[in-house]
Image (cartoon, rainbow, N blue to C red; front, side, top):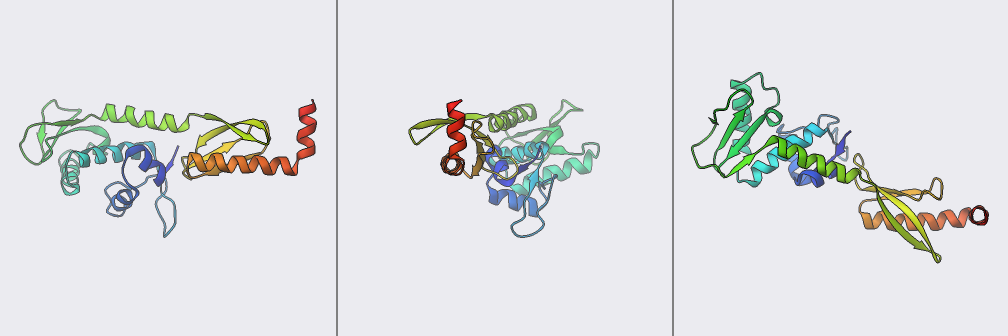
Length: 210
């Protein structure tokens, strides 16, 4: 499963500008597909989502990117067995410093400064939150589209790779389209149903008669 920049932004709360900056400065790079030039697509893995959410949570707590980088560098230097710090450790911050609790020790390691703890970045909680967001995106949503005095049942799906949504009308085989927003997707499927009926009107009438 992979996610483009638009979906990563929607799931983690990080802006597309932040994601672009974090990629270009090697803070968190997409592991499925990197950008190869202007207009190219970045594709992130689920683990990338978790790491991005950790960074966003620390940023929201008032920690600068410089301090986040310093904490990651410290872990990689002093604990080389931890391959991906943002996936394998628990961060605690007071809004000024970052404190780290590893799986190998119950002691709190003061990476930056002393202070009172005000927020705990629990990896398990973040994973569950991201799982919930991903699940919500993949849940099918059913809508009714009214056209020419008749209601048509359509199914909306989130498009994790291209972004936005794609929508289909099961009772009209092959009738499907997409849109950047739910509203646009539903408007597009309404037009698609109209075009389908116009092109295959006789067939549709025969189907209704059956």
